[in-house]
Length: 339
Image (tube, rainbow, N blue to C red):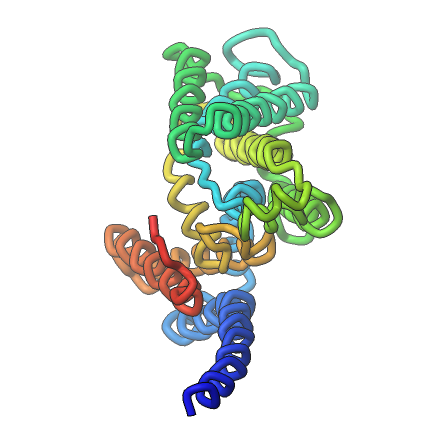
């Protein structure tokens, strides 16, 4: 009798595993989009102003900077790593571009070359994070936190106690100019998102990042250049943070050290809410962009219905915890160690 029971147990277990995987995949892929739709319906019912074109435009414009950050962060998270250098890289890039274009502090006027230089600076910060994490085997949490401090230090030195204001009419036009009713910087964000999707789907870095996050040891034994992919992912992320810092500088019309304040939490929140797992191996650029829209719509809707800013922060924290719990719940049986 015992062998008979054993023979029946194996097929049942074999059928259960695909069910768990399909359910978790369904939650990760469709759940955030459904949540976004429900949020829009609720806020539209609570505030007539929410569904107006003017407010929709505000949401899209407000999401632009966070969307750019989320594109780069997604690749790091898919690796199973974490990146806390966003604020420092954005600060350094913001001051770099502000001092290299026409400004009130010096006679520089390098135009578009200044934007390229600031983006390269951000990529170098990301490159440093990747090299330190992979070369010295230091957890990415610590290396990126240190890189963030270095970036803020560089930005503070460049700031020099005197705020540089932009004097470039071209950049002023980018800050206020519109295409199809949306600011031009919103279209910059759309372009970065498109590049991120192309990299994710059609390059080795994009394909390998998810494989490394899912099972790094297996990926390494299969011949995947794990170290190289990690370094490239961090460098690309640094470049996107720099672009976000440049966008903030153009919006404000000046370079400030606080250009990236609060973006670490906001970007990680958006990525997690969108279905990109902190443990790696699952998610993607589109997932994170849905998360960006959820966070932006949530903040916008709470403001329209008169909720206190302090309560808004608490609500975002609750949503992060709930999102992580929901996305990780179907995988709990396979998570023997949680750290």
